[in-house]
Length: 219
Image (tube, rainbow, N blue to C red):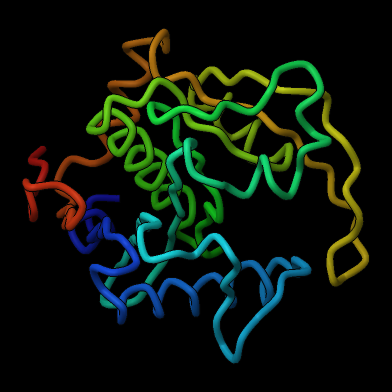
């Protein structure tokens, strides 16, 4: 893990900040979600993009040895976002929020491989760091049951907006079950959250969306 972390770099940027990095993320998403996981998503050439990939959309990219190993997309919930526009039927017990202190996280994923677990820990921690730096109250997401379990295993509390629902099949004809919900930023177990955030120790974070710019969180 030490060797992997020493090579990890995280980038946070908006679509208009870095067109080249945005293209790299779109290509990574196509390789991961379409080619590897078999999701039925529209592609343009070698890129996976949709109507929510706008100039002011925020992206996180995690790289190791010059290649992307993980990424996610963040959209503030007072703007149109994927969950409330594409999956309105999944919010049956709580409505989707439309507030500036809530962000949606989508297209969260890490490329499979021997270092998948430690890279996923760093990406989950980066997601929380992103929320804390923006004083977000919650992070909204549409996810499968695997990611919900992964958060639970890391001691992260989630709150559903409705029951899980079968939602078609992927390109390999495997059934998909999705659930809508949120991760409250406040009220998490402080010790477990500190443990998760400690995985960022030694990771260089280049944040073009805040005035702080390039930082390195030291161990």
